[in-house]
Amino acid sequence: MKLAAIRGKDNEERLGVLDGEYCIDLIAALPPNDLRGRAMFADAISFIRAGDEARRLADRTLADAPDSARIPVNQATFTAPIRPTTILCTGSNYRQHNQEKANTAISGKEPEFFLKTADCVVGPDEPVVYDPALTEKLDCETELAIVIGKAGRHIPLADAAKHVFGYTIGNDVTARDRQVRKTAGGDTWYDLGRGKAFDTSAPLGPCIVTADEIGDPQKLRLQTRINGELRQSSNTSDMIWSCAELVHFFSVSFTLKPGMVIITGTPAGTAWSTDRSLGGTWQGLPGLVPATRYCLPGDVVESEIEKIGILRNPVISWTK
Image (cartoon, rainbow, N blue to C red; front, side, top):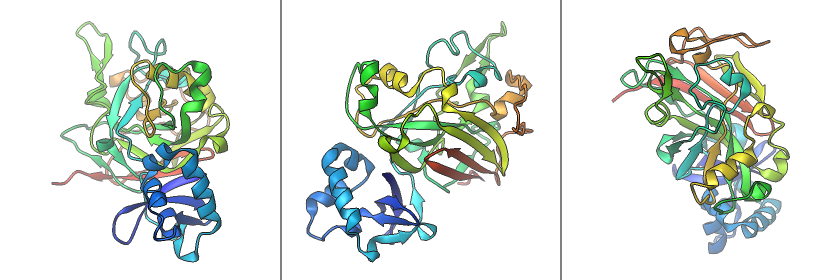
């Protein structure tokens, strides 16, 4: 199943399911008096919390959906498929990425840990804002995002998959000149607060694909294109810590709850890799176009992951 969020004529977000060339508005497909169904289909988090009951009702609803609930995909306005209260983030989690940049003493030795919030989230085709007062080195990172489906704390590695509802695409938009810092002695350290968490720094979408349709999350191709140029091209098999290991890792600090999202790191090919002033050590990879600059207004970023789709976002200037 592929869950999406669409903006209705009333400008409210509605939960839908992608079905070929259509997105089916789940609430519009229900009988008007099905209050329980309307509550379960209110948004993605409500759907996930309702568990198997919501999935069974959705299957029945899709089978009987009237034409009035079917919206052509090319006519729908999609928004972020989920608005998590917490986005748990890790970095330095791809072997090739660690070879192209300045590293801290713990890079690649233990998962980096930082947070984003729902305030950072934008959806498909919604803009990423370039604000020169915050950063002049705006970078983008395509990442596989895990959507938690079942609550748990101290989740054993062997049980991690049972707590995953599905997967979507995340773009870990980063202010590199805020993130990468140098000490007087030349050591590198990261400011993962201001460098990672700010308005529009967490595009998510275009949909959530349930875990049963993804299969092995460590066998997915992912790419980033900026203005059509291929900047990143890799596979989730290059992760240092797998999705299951990250679920286990984060559950030591937090009770993971339905609707929380974990983003899992990015592969080589970021603009950082060509920025010698911040420790970039671009070596070149077959087929990739090295960045000549960071993102600027007018750019279009496309993040693509196999079995999920393409998350597309334009970059615009900040205005009052």
